[in-house]
Image 1 (tube, rainbow, N blue to C red):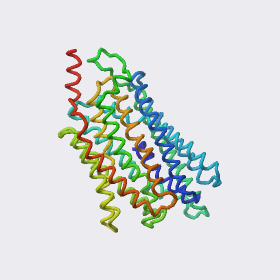
Image 2 (cartoon, rainbow, N blue to C red):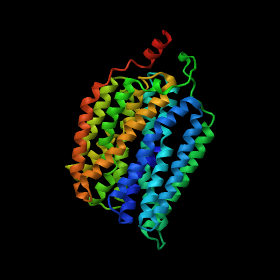
Image 3 (cartoon, rainbow, N blue to C red):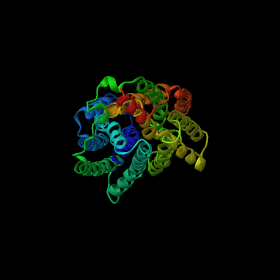
Image 4 (spheres, helix red, strand yellow):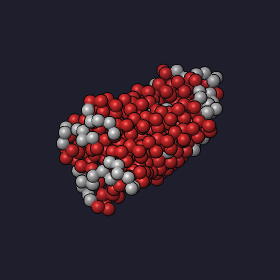
Length: 402
């Protein structure tokens, strides 16, 4: 809940900083690319180190603590002067957020995959992802509620109210990190018994299936994140809602739509061909955002919930597939490769592509979203090119048989 709440909240913070400090759209791009790049580069490394060294529970707690501390930097940016130092500050803070978030998905998925059998890990991933989406849905309205609370009966500017709200949320995040550390600091993923307990090697994690899955994931990620990362700016500037509680509620609705999506797709990957489940989720997200663009009112809100339902299903679908292409000893590393270079790598290029299309004109966001939706549909079409996974049970049986 805390990890996804923070990371999904980042585009909204970027939009608020750009509006409050009167910066060009490039400020939003700078924050997003700094975050996604650092996370992309570190996901595989953190997963590999966790496979070799253990202490997965402690690594998770430290990651949450780093993210929560980093958002104090955004609180400072809101009250800092609007000059070159501001751009430098938000870039550094975004890099720290990426560093903290790099630990969660590869290690968290490996913990769940190890704790549940082959028939239940998909549902466990979906349940965990659903709780993450609850965090994503809660953070925007919580932020605006805290800003209203701090601004009540006080002569504070919006930037000061928002800054105080971020400080309060950071304290909540640090408290959560402490709870996670106390509960999981001694947790280590058991070794791969079928492989004699040997440690993971990078070559073992980089199978052909993992590489192809990562490429397809990158295409999907470019489309989805190019849209979701700029959605606050689209709502603010194109839909004309401005920065306020309605913006927070609209984003919350998108993330609320993802809660049943995580549960549904977590169940489907255990019952159907995972490749086609992944393809349907990519196509559904593309069609959902097109519906949102071309409608208004309650129908548009319904479509944004549909977009969230399909868009944020990556945790159970992608990482369930990833574990089928490698042995247990390399699950964290394989998860980190797919999530880091696939999801987070695509996340770097998605927002950047949106920036290239719109230039300095927010009104071109509609056209940018149409282009990205087309890319998402292409990603859905090529998903069946993945080799059919044999499943963890078959893979490890083959391994035991030599």
